[in-house]
Length: 459
Image 1: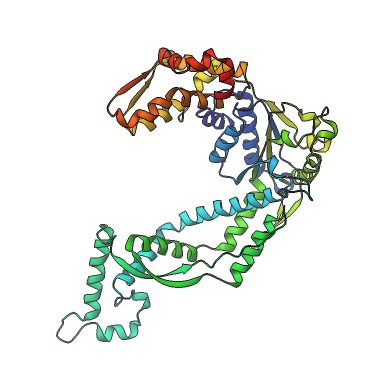
Image 2: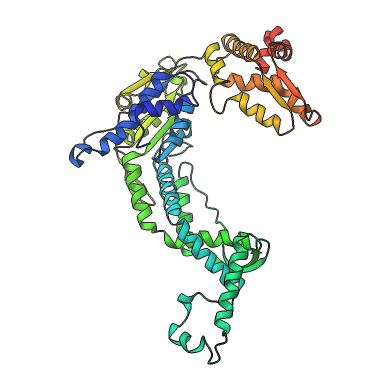
């Protein structure tokens, strides 16, 4: 992500998300600004706060998908959370600070995976040597041998090879057999860690993080025990790689790098933020904890220090992207202080027939590609004609207009309805080709097309 320009970020998002150019451009600029800030002098860098974003639009238009694809593009710690999980302190629900702790866990895993990749070759080499020690217990690697005595006993006066040389020769033969995968099914005895039984701790609602800290503390007091077990060579090799990788990683360095990355380039996506907004018309009927959640969110978004098991984390430069449909409420119903911390707002447009047609044909993971691949496993070749796809897109638009508008999610329901019979009978139709054209689509949707009340339930 650090090397991508805004235009390239939008181009990557275009591969999976149709339309919503304004939203994609705004997100791309926000991501590029993270990189720009890192190029500044430390004194000025500290003064530049991220410009948080609110994405507004009906369900199924791509708000969450933009965040999901952005997380895959970004090398920065990224965490998506639903605002409905949180409640005001004192009510049942999660504490808002837990999102920062979760982001830190993601940062730790991200940096750790990078470090594992860095030491992978050395870990595999060490694991191979240990595996050969298990396969040939009498052989020891040279670094484990007393070299002062080795010279005296390795070669006899007659020049015949002593056991040490013969063992080395056997070890190399075993190495070749192992690399040719001829020893995969052989059983070896290995000393493996056995996880201690988990202790159940009854945590108060909203204090699940304290439960995790207690478990972490008990795991240090009662570490995992070692137990000898017999397993296949290929499984033992994977266990040895994990063990050797863990030895080669500097865990303090991992924590330090993850903390810096979370504080400087972390992103938190808060979905369904409109569900914690009390509409002006709702009055006393609204949930009493909604405004309390906003007040609890405010210091996190404004910038504060959150205590985690890895140390104190500052949230001043974490980028927050919020999204919501805002059907009943509107962004101006947020508490004024929270509104001020989301200066950028973008409205995503409802989807029509043309957008639906592009969604089921253009993206790499289009539904047509998914269903064709699934049925191909049964030997059924599904071909979607252009007029059939246009019929599906038109019907999706009509259904959204006449019932609840659920955006592109309507396409999932339609495809399932159209292909249900084919999916059921596919194992008995091996080698056949099915043409999904306009007539086929109209036939499968005839009952719901005629009965409007039925379409409300089925679609």
